[in-house]
Image (cartoon, rainbow, N blue to C red; front, top):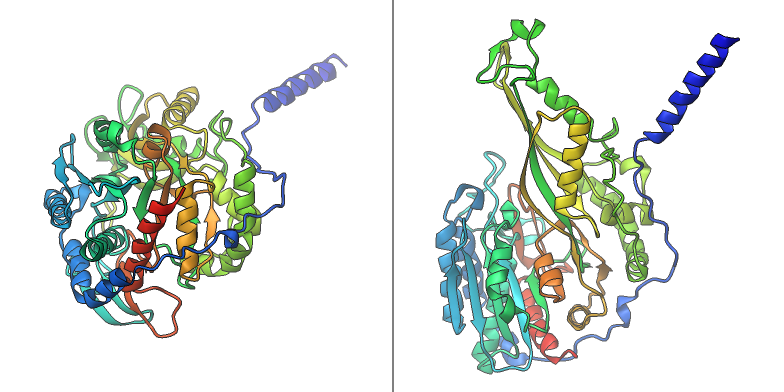
Amino acid sequence: MIRTTALALVLSALSMTAVAHAEPKRPSFPFTTDVAYDASKVAPYKGRHAAAYAYIDANKDRDVANVQRWVRQRSISAQNDGVVQMAEMLRDDLKALGFKEAELVPTKRHPGVWGYYDAGAKTTIAVYMMYDVQPIEPTGWKVDAFAGTIVEDHPLGRVLMARGATNQKGPQRIFLNALQAIIATEKKLPVNIMLLAEGEEELGSPHYPDLIAKYADRLKQAKGGVVFPMMSQAPSGGVQMTLGVKGNIYFELEAQGGPQGGPKDAEVHSSFKAIVDAPGWRLAQALASLTSPDGNTIVVPGYYDSIRQPNQEEQELINGVVPGWTAREPELRKSLGVDKWIDGLSGRAAITEYLFDTTLNIDGIWGGYSGEGTKTILPHKFTAKLDSRLVPNQTPDESERLIRAHLDAKGFTDIKLTRLSGYPPAQSSVKAALVQATIGTYRKYGITPDVMPRLAGSAPYYVFTDILKLPIVSAGIGYGTGAHAPNEFIVIDPKPGSKLAGITDAEKFYVDLVHAVAAAR
């Protein structure tokens, strides 16, 4: 009887301990409204700028050549390949357009580019640009990635295939082409423009806040908001217009031999595994401790605690895009080579998780021997790169602190954590005059956009929304794909009957957008 009672007490204590140490659950996002935002109620922009449109049509070949000139200039930030030369090209192009100020701005790594166009206008807008690109993949390209090749027989029509074509040199130079058309036909722009470009977006924008700080007092006067040129059409011709981005923290975890065990300075023969600890297994166990076995739930204590629920505006925006999202889900999964979403999610549940849940992802792991044949070694060091997409109320500092505390609590004090980049999420309101003007411009071109609260990817928008208190939109028509991948391209001339915009319509859109923002109240 005593033994039974003692056993019961032990079992009870273990049960209470298990409850007290229950692993975190993924957050849920219940909705409190079924009201849907309807972008079709925004009136189309009615302005006509015939002279600028005609100028664009007459100078199409030159405008295409301008885009080719940009993509032919290498600017791989990770390898410092052609970066300064690209910055100088952007600066010189701004000068040629008549920007009163155009200069390179030094940072601790790659320079920024500042430009100011003074039109003497009532409205000032800021323009965010990035001039750097990702490295080139060793295989898979059909053309020279930096040749700026026009491919005539693409299934979507006539395309420009090159690194940077869609991310982001193509749409950015197209935007400048549009400004050139306005200046040539109207003598000046309808808005003043403050342009601040960075050369480190593909590195996580570590020094963009420094650039913002240098011009913050002036940028705060850009009450018209911030425009990020981007080709936003899907292959079907529709547009998903995003009002913000997730944040991000990118970091490395490293396991290396030391006082805790394992070879310290170099690999050793694998036979010594019988008596020597292996950093590879150490890193594997540390990584495994961060999530549930399926990798879909972050078990770092407190990691989900600060996530806020979707507010009323965000719920209405999600409700408004659910029909389009649901219709596109099969096509999206097919394009990704994915058979199903986590837990079989679909519809509103899927898009809500996609946009409102945080992530923890392994980008790469390396160490030891991975060549042909065999090499029986016990490596002294293994490294993994990870990223976490952050949602509203999460911050890179707190995310790093929680991960470090978790590793320490699990006994992984020897695992080195090195933060490589990070910034918080950002978002603008659909009610902002800039956003309404952008929706109206899309509507002029027969497009009623699906307006989403944010992009699931990341960009340093917070410097505008949080520091400068300015709304920002990414906007543009036209289609491009293959960012960060081989055979990146934009459509120059779509096939007859296509709903995609070519380069001339993409430029006319920006002519209208600039005027629409100037007229917005």
